Image (cartoon, rainbow, N blue to C red):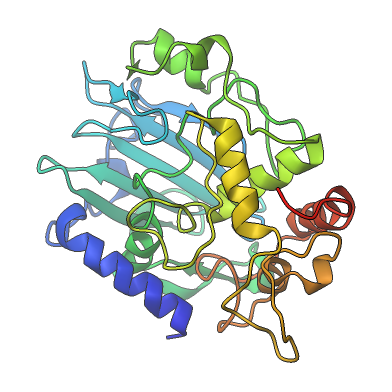
Length: 346
């Protein structure tokens, strides 16, 4: 196990002791999780709501669908707009597919004791059913439509390692990610579907309580000096902020990539301060003065070096991807080389 993976795993195990279910076995079939109207139907349950984050996580080019189901009469507590509290009984699903073929569906459930349970379901080749994957995952599942013909199904420990370091274990369902003011320049971003919900939809349905009213009147956006910068900061938020933030549970490096909607200007300034010209603990061979981001020089920026790599000893993110994202890397390079060329500090 490489050092980065070991660090995330250790952090996840520590958090799992109190926050994540260890003993209960998830349902054996996806059809028994509550996603569908009944065990013999492919129709979604009436209470299941689709959603789409405006800054999606790169997953080697997989097409993804996401759903949430809240228990009857319950609502999300959004009093802290940057750390939503989900009621017991909340269920979420994320389905991954390549070439139109579903490969796996990941499942998160909040149990009666407040802990979270994770599971992954692997689809049969004909797409007729999805059964519970082994807790250890499937490192090289044969999948003809996936890049290289192989697909890595994460272990439950991998799930905890990523979700366990976040301020809230639910990723992608936040005030910023569901903002009606969606970023048109977001990499891999998609418009809200006709059946999907956003921030205002959840509030109108009575499923979101306590959210400060100004975030409905003026939907949250990342504070930025240009559209390119907003898209770049959004990309880093969606792909990296679940580990790189300033709250308890973060990885032990001085890099903050999480955007907060409670004070977007201060949040963006904090993110930029942590990156621009900041010393990096990691140094590539031959580097004498490594910096996280060198304004005007993407090639010398450690952020780019690590995101471009898929060497297990240095790649970022360390889990969940075996291939780099050319569109995302191009966006970040343009931002560093062009937008930041005249900017020496935030």
